[in-house]
Image (cartoon, rainbow, N blue to C red; front, side):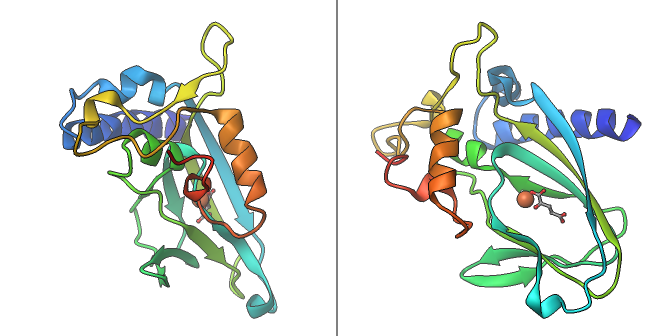
Amino acid sequence: MEYSQKTKALGITLLELLSEALGLKSFHLKEIDFAEDHKLYCHYYPPCPEPELAIGVPKHTDRNFITILLQDQIGGLQVLYENQWIGVPPIHGALIVFVGDFLELATNDKFISVPHRVLANQQGPKVSVTCVFNAPSQTAEGAPRLYAPIKELLSDGNPSIYREITYEDYLSHRLQNGVDGNSPLLRPGMLI
Ligand SMILES: O=C(O)CCC(=O)C(=O)O
Ligand SMILES: [Fe+2]
């Protein structure tokens, strides 16, 4: 409970800093409901006798605004950087922050949602905790919530590259991707 409250507060601070980094007022991302739907998930990875034949979590991008991840000392998290899987070594007390697909969309690709995966491991069990800031599918009035790049970030030199979409549109593109793990934002139906 306390961890949940602290990570929520950290997430809000991050949203303020990210807003400023984008040249927006510090409350901008928070005010467009980025901090509204906050959840905590615990992952348990049992030790795997043949890790080369298995995967902990397959390649994916996160379907939210941001993820704050706490990993233990076992390791196995990798990010895809320039077509190579790079290990993210565990550092005691450190948190990892992922930009999710909806922040990539909102910032018109200024911030990129990086594909990542978790390898299976002979050691273990491994545990991790993720705190996610989700993109609500509906408005407070119950209408489908629309997502598009933030207008203040767009200009003639930086036109919107994404269509206005609902969370349902996003999910259906994500499901069409099957198991390739690529961001649904790369699909033609998302791009203008
Ligand atoms: O457990 C981990 O290290 C990462 C989990 C993850 O990528 C996720 O929950 O989206
Ligand atoms: Fe993830």
